[in-house]
Length: 640
Image 1 (spheres, rainbow, N blue to C red):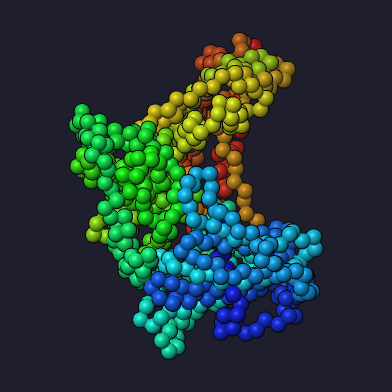
Image 2 (spheres, rainbow, N blue to C red):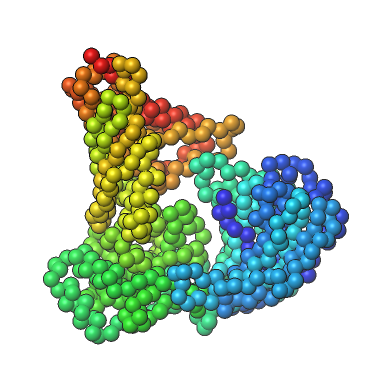
């Protein structure tokens, strides 16, 4: 699960005000209450986090964490990763290892704490680095690790997110979180699933906010669970105002967030006059806004490439458009700003939009304004329509957001402040698989199959990626793995893309199937659907706790028509009765007709995403079981 990774970074000495002293006997694994060990791989014995805000521009975060690892599956908790950059400093890291009896085995030396650049292959410039403290895998369980870290930050765009139980099969004996603020500098916070609200008290010229939890039993992730914020304890914190590298701002509302981002990037959208004239000429023949934007977008894709640049104010301030024009590369904010500048040259207004991107990424907390984003796209108003541009891709179809940035909230950055908007949501009718298969079936069950498929919207994404990012050899292997027919040879395949607003990928396959039908005496058993079947869903063996969440990938429509040319002289022993299955989750329908020696099988499935109560899981399992059973249907043919 690991939806909200730990930020346990800190120094024990400053934490004495948070909790009583930890005696040596309490490092013993035998001291863990038995209920906390049931179905747990690790137990957080103690976690204490103190975040001290010294001013609008500086804070110190300190955490002391003790975790007992119960088995091999818990080994991941025996390491600590501490990111930092030029606006943050790791003052100290300590790591200590104990055996099951609480006896000290090892203290990490400074030269055993690895420090390396956090750049990846797509990153050109970055000041992001990482310190890693970890122990070798232990052969004897249980064992206990203790980490203390202190870190100073001069980028207060981001306050800590406290998630004391950040993984499944992890129990918590005790954990606390304290935010210490200068009086008059208010803290914003949002509590999720916390039994006891914040304790707030004033001490001289400081105000302290404190949360604590005890004896949290391990959580098991359930199939199709909602985002962890729905059931795990969590506290989000954020400033009301800040100062970073000379930029000051208020951050209480979404308008404030957008206004601050706009100020960071103001007047960086100026391009050379030669390029401005080139864009004017490029778009002169287009009569519509959409046509002009499409020309500029194609120019952007052909002339630039994406590289990550993580420098300065947390990577939030863009490179000037003139430098992108000269260098032909940029990161998401730079390329979006560059596209905006080119559109500005032809008097088309466009606005950067900051968003939390990712195919499996949860939406932002819309009720808690803050910098919850990791990506920038461009929004172009066009009358009653809105054009959305993903400026980092050299292949992305014009105007298509898909699973990476579609169907979620984003912050439109306007000169007078930010505004929350929704990016395009793709419905089942947008995410279609239309498949036609012509099968010539032999008497021994061997078959030749010609498969023609059209995938649209979300359903085309994996095929589009294979087309554009895989070698031909890798494409072929990928296609073979996706065909769900046993014992076949792929004789030929081809892809063709249509880059529409709802993009389409066409696929053609030629297959030689050694055993499509199963002969037995004078009978021939013919499975009707070998390429598109949906599997059943595993039922739960105990009452469900959490809501049923069907994500955007469950918004689709499949329509299959399979035409069989039967061997001469074969007639059906019985006919397949038409079947329709209706549910709140979607609809399934199949039918078969035989005319002479031709069998036509049709199948259509429509699914809908959504959030349903926990009690609906049984109905979901039943719906999928019925579909799986129907997808296994076969007909029997007898030779005259």
